[in-house]
Image 1 (cartoon, rainbow, N blue to C red):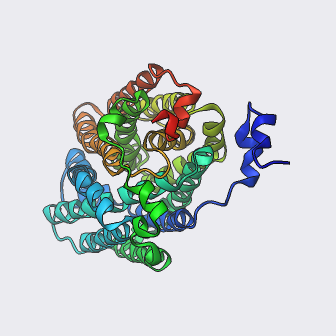
Image 2: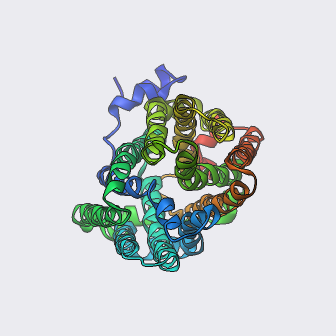
Image 3: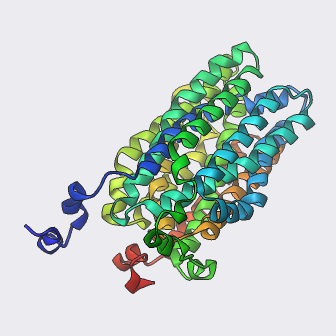
Length: 424
């Protein structure tokens, strides 16, 4: 049978027929998946401890939330630079450098003697974080075959999930050894992640100079103006902002503090377990969300997933019993897991396979980080003034802005082929 016969014989589901014949996931992406697990494991380790460590310096909820926001703020202001560095130096070099910067910053956090020192050291880590985030996104977007972008996004998200499941649990138990030890452990984990990428991808430090054919493809850069012309890109910016507010900001900064306040007897342990429970729901959704994204498009999984996450976030701050708290944490994780791969695939669609999308990816990252910055601050102020319930309700309500943005997108099959020459 000819190689392309499957497309003509089964036009309704070409991916299902062609998938077995596609090459395996590119080696560079497999390396990033392994490194992502290590990074997420370390991050999950300190996530439930960081806000509590901040309050140990005699500051309130809002000030503790700023520790989370300063990291995102540094990422926001440095994102454009990270995109340019990725274009000039190549993804592996920028990735390794960024991870090592975060490692140094994290270790310094463990030595912090005041709230101001902790704030400065954590902020410095944001500079390195955006470097490895943008470079990883650029490599994945450029190398992911269009037909399996959703699955690759799910694979990459799944590696973070596994780390996020184990990390918070370990972090909760590590808190018994004091707030500082987990930072040293996380710093070491980041050095391991940097080593994995360095030794595995050092041969392709400048992937744009491997061959004339590859160079011709990579040199083509997508202008930001072209991305703005895609309705899916503008919708992704809105949903990225709201998801950054809820999942990367409020969840990390307020959930641990809320658990301690609402469930005093076992709040410290539950604060870490809550983040792990969220990851369990996330993982359950990721088992199917990647394939759903490839089969049915990006719009539907994002709308459904973001709606579920928003509802769970809006109600979790009012619960007064552990079982309901756990159930809502799982539901929020399921919603985020449904939308995550679809949103990543939507951005990759805009960039297109083989195209350099540093500026586009940096812009999307800035939208997410902006939500991560102001979300914890505003929600923290609301929590200080009127309680945790209203802080989470406001956050969940804002999540529906992303839902509305995607409801306005008229997704067609041709939009999923934007990287094809006839659609550029």
